[in-house]
Image (cartoon, rainbow, N blue to C red; front, side, top):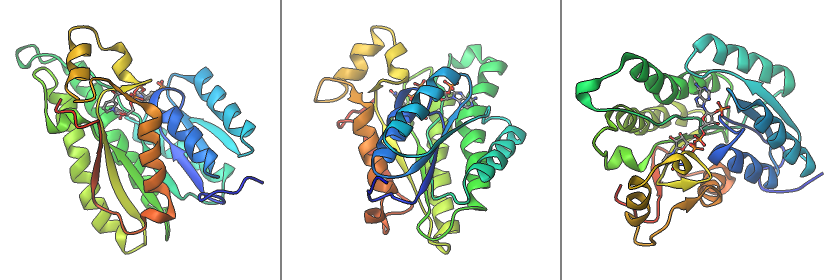
Length: 248
Ligand SMILES: NC(=O)c1ccc[n+]([C@@H]2O[C@H](COP(=O)([O-])OP(=O)(O)OC[C@H]3O[C@@H](n4cnc5c(N)ncnc54)[C@H](OP(=O)(O)O)[C@@H]3O)[C@@H](O)[C@H]2O)c1
């Protein structure tokens, strides 16, 4: 049995069939946790993530849910309850970017972006709140665009700003149970949604950091691993920028 600072813990990582979530799932498994690999459309990616976790000597199950649908999130937790008799760490990583100008506000895009980035983490955290106990962790995902919103990103950036509000309120609610709640604030990160960013935005995002590059998903995963660990027991209700000092 693998030893590690997360040995004996069970972690749910939403959106871990690809991108940053996948890197987090592998990192937490390397640190000893058993993993619930969540996906919506990336079934093959989720299966690959789960197999890579098993190859590390940890347990892994895959669960599917569109997190914007509360009934699907509830069913997902029921499935998880059958697979594991505990839940210690929840990483609210799934998200979707997109937007459009104010004058062209599109109802479908509005519903999708709020569904995945606002309602989804809320539904997941609500179910988690009933299960997490002493030493529990919720780690939410905001975005640097919440702090420095570019034009055309109003819906996404505002939903990601709401994540910071959720984080601070949930930290107050759950602290009495010994559960910490924090958010990470990535900048442009690869692999992840940044890979689909076209020029000239791509260069602008990279040059927004004095390092002149995008971050790597493993650099974000290390910060999540710290927040998930017992070493972060007194860190709650706060936000950590993982963006190479980028200002967009
Ligand atoms: N990468 C960046 O540059 C960057 C920058 C700032 C913040 N972030 C944040 O970091 C987090 C991870 O992003 P990423 O870069 O890894 O994105 P990504 O590669 O585009 O992956 C998005 C993930 O979200 C899941 N997802 C999307 N819609 C969903 C839905 N309706 N229900 C359930 N899951 C859904 C996807 O699952 P399926 O593939 O299974 O459908 C996928 O795993 C997000 O919260 C994002 O906002 C990323």
